[in-house]
View (tube, rainbow, N blue to C red):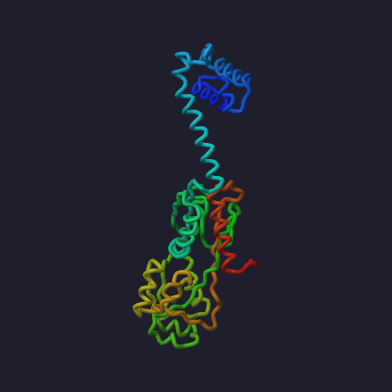
Length: 301
């Protein structure tokens, strides 16, 4: 049964007039009558009786009317919901992100997204990049924000490049130096964090590949703890630049250049299933990431 036919029945019942219902629905009287006859034929029941004063409901019609009203209302509400989804005024967006990304990069991005799309419900699940990839492939999240991962089933969109930088506390002798060598760093207590992350392996590889063994190392399970140790003068650390912007700005941590070592850049990307029919909120989120990347790198990017 077409929803328009039910709507016609509801309007005729409301006004008690085929003519008036036709005017509201922009239908001719024969069209209204044809729809009513089609409903009655499908239900096998008479719903309306024509009288000299208009149209009135039969007993069956009165019982059926609330169901028809609910069906029409539910359909129209569904249409409105779809319009809102297309205009990104409603819906739900489930994201996944690596720990450092969810802690330092995502919060301001999500704040802007929520301001622009207040009707969208946001949820973020955290895991290392490989775990986030598995969430995407299992359709547990729609978009993941991770370091570059190689998988033919996902499509990647560049977000930014994070750099590992050497950080020391505000009174450390390195602060007054223009740059230091890896050998000099190795004589300090080197603070490492999160053994399961790519940052940990990148830091160790930087020294290992040059045959340098740090004299002392301290391992912590997250970047925040590592920052605190550096602030307290417990050692030095190679930390992602995105994680230390506030501390560098306030002067509690100081970046120091490293000579004789390559710049360690780690591209961060947003991933989703290749060819996925992304929701309106997901498309809007990717659009925001593109805007932020262009703003950071210039209009030529």
